[in-house]
Length: 304
Image (cartoon, rainbow, N blue to C red; front, side, top):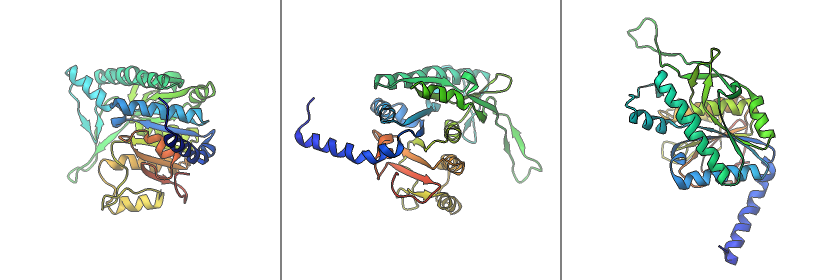
């Protein structure tokens, strides 16, 4: 389909405005956690894949870490396996872990690889068990009420936390021209599998790779103030103040803490963006306005 002269001029303007960002981020690593609506809406899936391919085409090194909680829940329901949650984490017994590995490591991971391939990119899917990419240990969850003299330890099964990331596996894929697509399944010292929160895996991967950015796709517009306006360009100190005064609470806290930990580890900035917006990743990286909340470890203006 040919463009009118006006449409062509607009396209040229958009590309020209993106040039400083392309130059700034050429050769840099950006870790993107992919989840939420962007994983289930066909239009959003296509736009996400194109954004990732474009990043690679202009010289950036995107690394994708994906979730899949709703898809896991759906299959468990079809198999009549009851889901239980403790502090927002799925209790993962052996049967549930089998389902997690099947959904994350096979179905979703391969679909993302195919989406990127269909958009003209070259992706390679791995789980944290491949090449011992993600070494993990069992996550210990404790619960205490005022009546208890000592905390109660709650066993939530094969739920883990990251012990270490094998950077060489990701480096090998990137140096071979691939876009790594990582399923957040870790492996223990005894070879056992662990289900790990994808946000936390993405944050650790960004830290180990010395990434320029961590981008977390969500189903919200970003971090909002008490009047409902999107906040962005936040420093670590400002975010801590917002947590202290109750502006940040509930379901947004884990993502904010993940972003904070990543920025404190030395990654220059973390973005919490609205995955319900078409081409959200591209808008956040290549425009001043963006589509979410930017948290940084330094005073900056815009997305640069």
